[in-house]
Length: 287
Image 1 (cartoon, rainbow, N blue to C red):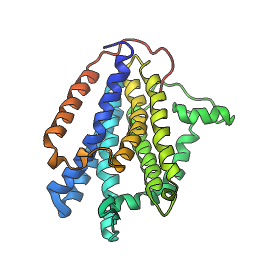
Image 2 (cartoon, helix red, strand yellow):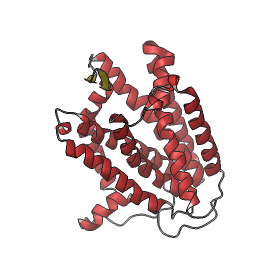
Image 3 (tube, one colour):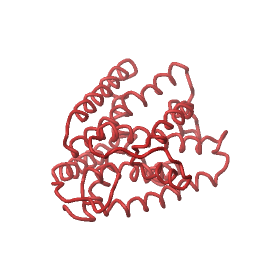
Image 4 (tube, rainbow, N blue to C red):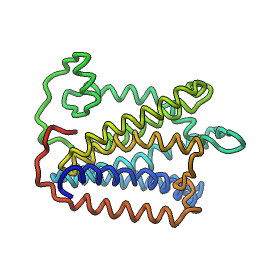
């Protein structure tokens, strides 16, 4: 389990299982706490994420910092960001998008693409950061010949903060992409774009997965698995949109056994990955 390709595969599955669980948590908060108390509950969830981030910043262990940052990003995204859109969509009385008599897009997701300007503006900070280890950004730096300065030493990086922001921004970006290609008044009127996003997501995630299984250390593998899984999840979301299968994670009350099995699988692979020793060196600079 300490060798390739098991480290990368384990990292992929532990991140993958958080996707349906995250959807389930949001649905359960709405159904359990109701309209009046779901926002305080979401606020507390976000605060737990902040606590995880604080603990991760203070922790010097790479594995622990990475895990705390990852869960901080998930909790902050779900608790503060998603529910802020839920609140203002309700406050502004935005109606859902109805397709074939069913709710195809909830009101909060109709509102979310309006944040694209904030996303692009704040992303500039990360794009022009000379210390970035993002392979995607560095590809543009190399091919556009952008000389943004010599990077500092990798030691002492705030891995918890990096992982949290990576989780939030990649999730945010692909939400915007999917919602724009879903919107039939914008990009959604071009069917070829949705098909392109589907096949590009599959091909891109496969490419990243083939790189991921070369990792020998769990912490960098988890950080690399985050974009790999989120890009792959685009294809899952689109297939669900096309009604290829029943999205059990958005109706956990009807699929309790299945969701319990997913949670147990997550606990199993999560425990394996968290306690996997990291004594080997990376073959190359990663994430």
